[in-house]
Amino acid sequence: MNGDRRDWAVILARGESRRMGAPKGLVVLPDDPRPLLNRVAALHEAGGRPLCIVTTPALAAAYAGALPRRLRPVWALHPAGGDTAASVLAAVARLGDRATHLWLHPVDVPLVAAATCDLLAAASRREPRAVIVPVFGPDRGHPVVAPLAPWLGRDPGDHDGPMRDLIDASGVPVRRLPVDDAAVVRDFDRPPAGAAPGTHGGATD
Image (cartoon, rainbow, N blue to C red; front, side, top):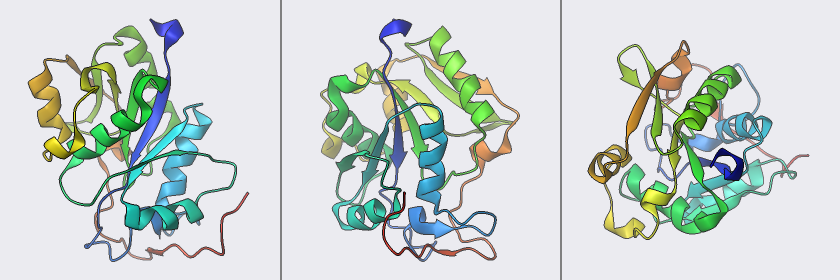
């Protein structure tokens, strides 16, 4: 099965970001001039994973304009509202048989190390039918690596809860992978000191 793998990164960027004060994917942190969306995209681009971005129709144009021109993501558009299950199922419906495994990565978790992704990839290759969840201490983090097949045919509109509930109800095995990377559990729900909305003069190379 490993030889037939088709891993896609699914960037979850459908939230309205009221607490952040701007779309999360466009926020720029003080340590890097790239918006959060670009940082997450670059991590998976470096790992050789094509991109699917799940967002709302209202945010799609702004996010598309923020990305480097060389990236050609697949867009999965779904209305605002609901929780992560709807976002993930929108990506599943959009990708279909183009993917065997999804890397579910919220756009507000931008600091994950490439070495952590290598560990997740190795764990998923060992157990390709399992959902691989990185954990730091007692906390579950992201990105989560999951097989796509168990979710095919499910309507995103019928599932508005967290993806964890959908996984638990499916019977798909879940493997917790301890990692030495606090970034897997560090999300930016509120703007840190010095953060600002991204400003873009159009897409860049």
